[in-house]
Amino acid sequence: HAFPQKETLVSPQQQREGPEGCNIFIYHLPQDFTDFELLQMFVSFGNVISAKVFVDRATNQSFVSFDHPASALASIQAMNGFQIGMKRLKVQLKRPKDANRPY
Image 1 (cartoon, rainbow, N blue to C red):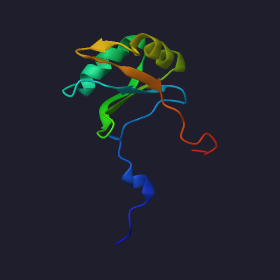
Image 2 (cartoon, helix red, strand yellow):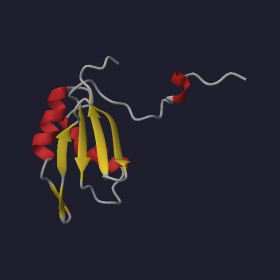
Image 3 (cartoon, rainbow, N blue to C red):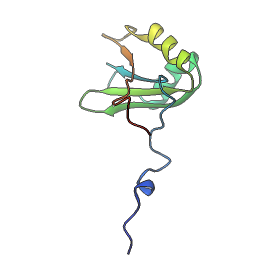
């Protein structure tokens, strides 16, 4: 009975990230927001690779990945401060945790 290798733990259903500079975090979405609604909100800025609401419940952080950095920047400029209900969205670029670490 062999132990599973690390690679097998990552399933295709895992959230996919775009290239460097293509991934954004969104804060302050409504609690009942869905992945599909998030996708619809950001798809006008470019090709969305993945859209996940509330990847981190503690911070209510949501996550969108594009295939091109220009799309990510355009979405930040357009959507940061966008009002939904009583809240304004905070949209920012995902920073690499450690720029020196090879993938």
